[in-house]
Image 1 (cartoon, helix red, strand yellow):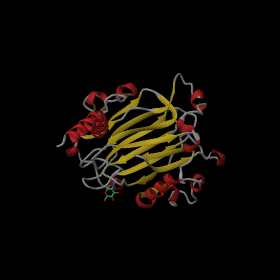
Image 2 (cartoon, protein in one colour):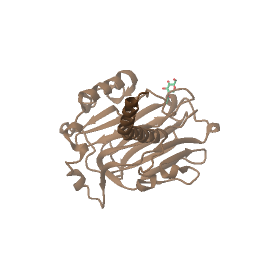
Image 3 (tube, helix red, strand yellow):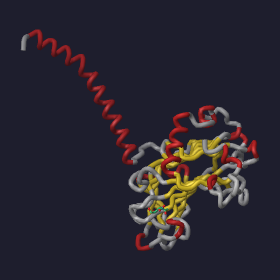
Length: 310
Ligand SMILES: *[C@@H]1O[C@H](CO)[C@@H](O)[C@H](O)[C@H]1NC(C)=O
């Protein structure tokens, strides 16, 4: 190498080193972040006990990973569940879940939001109906307003919900309720109070999950029974942050007046074109049952059906 070249290399080396180190450092940090999310070790994220409490004994409820994950356990002795410490009115409420693997036939894993107003309750439900090994779960959603439910929809999922965590969430504001699986909307329920359809918009809800024996209806309409030799049935949860308006001391008025919250903004009051396409994709490929189309149950479709789903 000539002297000039050696000098040049020296200059380039001195100039580049900090830049390259900086790039490598950034890449390493990004990788750590991505890996952290992938394995579910959510260091720094909200722990279960900050927002939730168990409703089960220690045989049926497990805290893992410093409170960043929990498990519900169903066996022949007891069902299990947990609930939020607080009540909420509007926002985006969701969780990441990994459902009971293997033979889960007859089990129902419910993740839902419900008001404490007996007889006139509001509720938004995800219900995962288990199945025999290798056969698909069904995800049923339902909505109650003022105690009036019977609005079931059922879909298959486009992935195996037992092999990895996926997020299941509800966007809820004064205009619409959107059920999401990961970032894909699977259902919309619009505010149709103007045509007399009750809509959940005033009662705060708690957030709950339970696993129970639903063998009389869950799998193949109750034809496949739960088999306790496969117990315990275990579902795992993570991501316990709640991005919603918390109702303290029964003060619902301030949540109803929160027009500046992101979930109230105009872009969340209807689905955008891209999300409408996603919803159509789900309905065209994975829809199993829609109460709107059930002519045995109601000879004429309920009034909101002409305006939902899109
Ligand atoms: C279980 O698998 C059967 C057979 O593939 C399917 O018909 C059914 O919809 C699946 N899900 C449930 C919850 O029964």
